[in-house]
Each structure stands twice: as structure tokens, then as C-alpha cells.
Image (cartoon, rainbow, N blue to C red; front, side, top):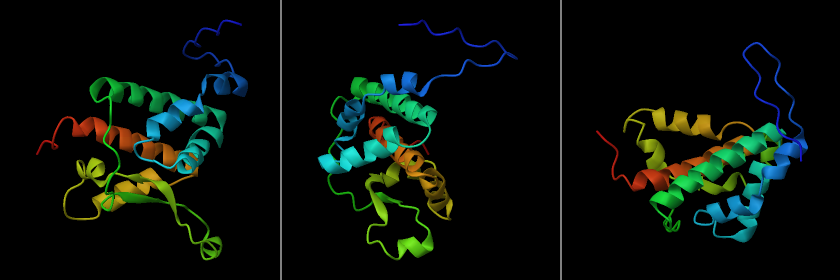
Length: 168
């Protein structure tokens, strides 16, 4: 195996990274296991993980894997067994962004992974449209972005729940 090139110095061009180098470190089963508390159905988990780790540019897939794994490590150290999803009536659906003409033809308009409302409510005032604006920001874009953001928010919610209510 070749040794990685040292990082480029400021002003020097960066060494291109082959997609195969990125896909070599991605282990989808690890992210599937990590998301099990929020996606109890194996087919839903496989679908979300495929969107997050199997679609789009390789550097995005690699970044999603790295960030989710690191958040998972922190969560495992703080709270080894995140609470099961349970009643998620208050959670926020992640919309599937389809062109209007296509959306009319489909019944499914949301992804199976939902965002815990309380994690964004920590930052949003009770009144106004701030929460809705935050939801729009984290769920916009292609599935790999929206679902990676939703997954990270699930993990952050579990981490922050350990700390009790948000400071006022």
C-alpha cells in the first residue's frame, strides 16, 4: 500500500484523491448499526445509508462517513445505548425534494429518517419562523446532504439529551 502524500503547503496544489481511496475506508454496516435506534427497519436503514454513503461525489460520501462515525464514537462514550425512537410524533419529517410535476405522481414525500424537533428547538426561539428556516436549511439539497444532516442531528440530539435541557 502506498503512503499518503503529505498535505499541501499553503499555495501548493493539493494531491488529487482517487475515489477508490475514499470508498476503501467507508464501511456502510457501521453507519447502519449506528442509525438503528432511529431507523428500526433494516430496509429503511439500508436506503438511508445508501443515500448518505453511496450517492453523490466521493468526497461527500467520505465526509459523511467520517463525521457520522466520529459522532457515533462520542455518543458511544457518553451514552452507549441511545434511546429507541419510540413515539416520534413531534419529530420533523425530511422532505423528498421532487419537482412539482413529479411530486404529484408519488405518495412518498418524506424520507424514513426524521429529525428530533428538540435538537433544533435548542437554537430556535419559541415564536417566529426560525425553526422552519433551520429545517429548510438542513433538509435542502440532494438526499446525501439532507439525510446526512438529519442523521447527524439525531446523534447530536442523543448527545445533548445527556446534558439536560438547553441553557436559557
